[in-house]
Structure formats: structure tokens, C-alpha cells
Length: 553
Ligand code: GLC
View 1 (cartoon, protein in one colour):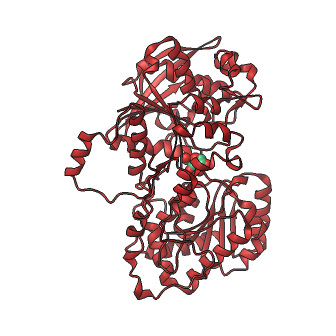
View 2: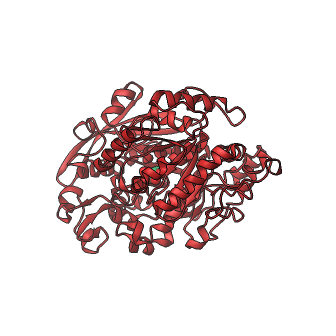
């Protein structure tokens, strides 16, 4: 299958957030599963600076967008089994930042238009184009528009992925022709019109052959007003083509056994390095050096959907627990001010860095014991998966991908890989955090087993890549895996399947991702079972597979 993946960012070339991580690691994973994959990205200044000498110049052409006739250069690079294409226009992309310019609408309209215009210059004519978020929402729209006139564009199927529905690409409808080069029909029939605005995301959702989002639970949440930022009825209308596929993480980049960014390496079999990383973190941030004091880490953009209001509400109660708090992130001023102040109140027990700092974030993932993520909404969330990989047990609110990746700790059965709470309530958050802190302090062996299950949770891309491929293939009436490839695989040793990714747009009751036997223990104090009754191996792998649940659609 030939797939073109279109994105406004991809690691390691250019990244500002989760989309960058996903777009950097999903295409290689698709290629590993046997697809032919190319990625289209704008040639930003930072890519030219860092990778310029590794790029091959392919060709140039001019792209017509409304009355504009715009130069477009095409560069390429082969990496991880994928051809990466970079679309060059210095006026639009030779700038210090990726986003945040007044003409972002025009910049990404150019990029989307150029991708469609230059298709026959690429290594292959794609069978499927996969576009992401509002910046590339015009791709399925332009393909439909061109398809009216030229048959070959109708031969391409489109998939549109929503990473966060909050960002919709809204403009004054007046610019439809002038900026985007589209006929008035696109707003007149309502396809691109929402609450009086021109809405690119809505246009893409309606135009694409399939719509995906980054977790099964978020796919369901998107049909509710609380989560959908006004698009709930559109999402309900498009339910028939909506799929939730859980993101993975790059398990080679994020591997505590080999990661050069952390001070001491470690693994499930030898956790000594983690204890040293913890001491190092305490030293580095001026916290009291106490190996028995659990460190709770927060690494987050400081914006409202991350749920930090809950932390603000009960900060004194939290700090009344025997724990230390480390917080890294920047964002809205009100949170920055609050946490700066709080850090001063609890010197030696709370450290606050209002920054975006990858090295420090890795020091927290490796050095902390618990990882707090009380999000109000979270399409998928990658940090909780990274934290688990580094043996830092997550405490999360049950929303979106957090609900799909965390099985709450069950003391009775010695099961689960983290802690979670359902209601958006600071009291509930405090309650589970307290349970986690006391499990750490009073039942170290039970905590060690919980930590091990977290570390062994499988968030590799393999399974999700196959879920995408089966959606892509399905648009052509095909099944995936390709029977020929599957036969080959059978001959090879089978890897332990990752149990976490689901492809499902199922009714809410069906999408409950936790193992049936792992009933939440919200109202049970953590009274761990006798150590010998539950050998360490029992908790992890076997339990996880019980979470496999297919929507049967
Ligand atoms: C967005 C979402 C985040 C998700 C990421 C990658 O940043 O907010 O939850 O993990 O996209 O899909």
C-alpha cells in the first residue's frame, strides 16, 4: 500500500508537541509493517539549518493559490524506511518558529495546495493520503475539489486525524476565495461553515473518507459537547467513518536501559540506576535528599485542559502528604504565577521550573516515583506512557487516552499499572494520590510490582500501525494484513502482541478499556496482599491482554 502522510511537524526535524512525536514515529512503523510510506513537511528554517546538507533537491514548480503564483521547491531525504519530502518556500517557512504568525492560514493553505499540486513529482502516486490537524485540513478538501475536474484525484482515498479538536483553523468566510482559492459553494452548503466562521477542521472531517483520532475513548468523547468544542453534532454525523487508534511511543528513543539523556541507566531487572537518578534529581533541584520520600512529577504545558486547576485547589493538602513535588512546564500566566508562588512556600519539598526543557523532563521521568496528569481532557497523551516506560507510576484522570492506557491499581488482585480517578474533582485526585504515596511508603514491595507492571506495559507502535493500515486498506475494500504478508509473518517468531491499541468507535459501554477483572479500587485503602501470594511476574503481561476488546464493527 502506498501512503502519503502529510503533517505540519515531525520529530526529529521539527517538533512543538505530541503531533510531532506521532508524525515522527508512526510513518516508520507503517513502513516496518510493509507499507510504502512518504511524509510531506514544510521546509522550516530549523530543518534547513540542521539537516540542510543531508537533503536532496528534487525539483521546483509554481503553485497557483487564488491569485497567487508561488514558488515551491521540493527536497527529500530517506530515513527509517520512509521518504521524507520537504516543501520549500522561504517567504512562508524560513522563520524562527513553526506557528504563531498572522499569515498561518495562508502558509498552510500554500503547503496543502503544494502537496496536492506536486503529487506526480513524488516517488509514487499515493493510494491513501493521511492528513493531520487543521494545518493540513485543506488537503482532503483540495483533493475533492480537484477531483471534480480530474479523475486521477478521485483515485486517492483520504484519512484525516484529529489530534486535538480544540484547534480548528477558523477564519472569516470572506477569505475563502482570496486566501484558499475555493468556490463559495464550500461555505454555502455548510461544509466549511461553523458558527458563522470558515472552519477548516469541519471541512476536513466532512470531506475525508475516514476520520481518526488518537484514542478510542476520545473518539467517543468527541460526540459529547463537553469535549467537542462545538463540533459534537458533526462528529456524531460522521460516526460511521470515525475510528479511535491509540498512539504509541518510540520505544527505542524512550528506553531507560540505553537513554543517554538520563544520568544512570536501568531496567526492570536492575533498578539501581533509578534510585541514583532520583538522588540526582533531588540534588539538582535543591530538594531534601531522601530516598524514601516519593517524588511526584508533573511535566506539562500549563494550559487549562491539563487540569492544573485541581492541583492549585488542593496544593496545601498535597504538600501535607509525605511527598515531594517537581513541576516542569510553561504556559498561561495564571498558572506560572501560582506555581512560582507555591514553590517558594515549600522550599526543599517542591521545585518548580517554568520552562520547556527536554533534559530536565527526562531527569523527571527517570528520577520521580509518581507522575501526575489530572487532565480535564486528553486526546491521547504521551507523557503518561513515557513515565511508565521509565518506571514512574502515573496518577491520571480517566479521560481520552489516559483512560485507555492506565488500568487502575487493584490491591486485591495485585493488578493495574497506575492510579486513576473519574470525576474532575480535586478531592478525588487527592484521594488517589494519597493512596499512591502511602503504597510507596508503607508497602514498598507492592509498589515495586506496580512499578514493574507500568514498565512492562507495551506502548510500541506495531499494533497501532496495523490498526491504521487496516483502516487504509478498508477504504479500498481490502483487508489488512495482506494475506501474503501474514503468511510470511507466521513463519517468523511472533512478538508478544501489544494489548493497548484499539481501533474502535464503539458505544461508550463497549470501549471500557480496562481488564474486566481489574475493578477500580477507588474506595479501598491500599491494603496490599501478602507478598508471596503474588509473584512479580503475575501482574504484568498476562493481565494486560485481558484489555483486548473489539468493538465488533
Ligand atoms: C495532541 C493531544 C495529545 C496527543 C497528541 C498526539 O497534542 O493534545 O493528547 O497525545 O496530540 O496525538
